[in-house]
Image (tube, rainbow, N blue to C red; front, side, top):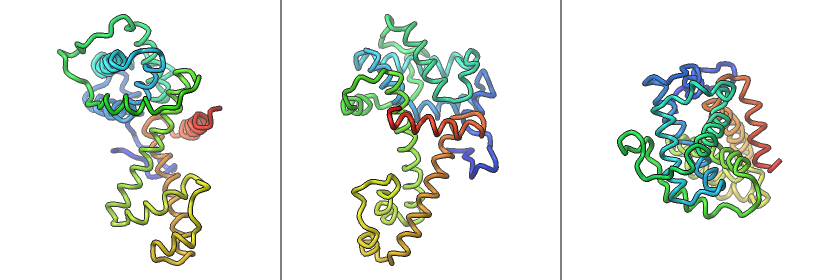
Length: 243
């Protein structure tokens, strides 16, 4: 992603802050909005499926929703939801689904062109693996959003380590990021990596620190101000806990 903050001392113009400030997206803010939609489309798809739409209907509805979002300027009506892309997208998708439920059609707006390149087949396969429980569509959306954000953060760290030639070390140490009880003892990992146990502890500490920084940076892409980052983080962690 571009425009990613390097820390909390500065809050650069990020993707959602750019879009929210623009109101009616111009070329630059439309591109930023398209990037965000491409990154976070799956929570919307899960939301539509959990609302009772069949797979094909949800696919058509999601594609039409994103086409409308990008082409028709929904942001003019976003108002208080503009602060966080997550809240805006859920509200907009819910309103759109309510209005368009009877219009699940194959022909999309914009001359049949897809607004985003979305692998709905992979999305439906993921949906079928979702746990069966009684949580509302909105709660499922929030949980999937949080998991998507964590996946993107982990993917960013993996890419950075791969570029630095340290992918094997990352793959060995990432298990320590989540406090997994199944994580091997430090001594075993030290042997596997050919390091001292002390060096492994230092590497884990640095990875955890980098993970926290990257997570906050990822969140910053979806909120309009620096002050929103901590609140958004708390809400997303609550969604993961099922609060």
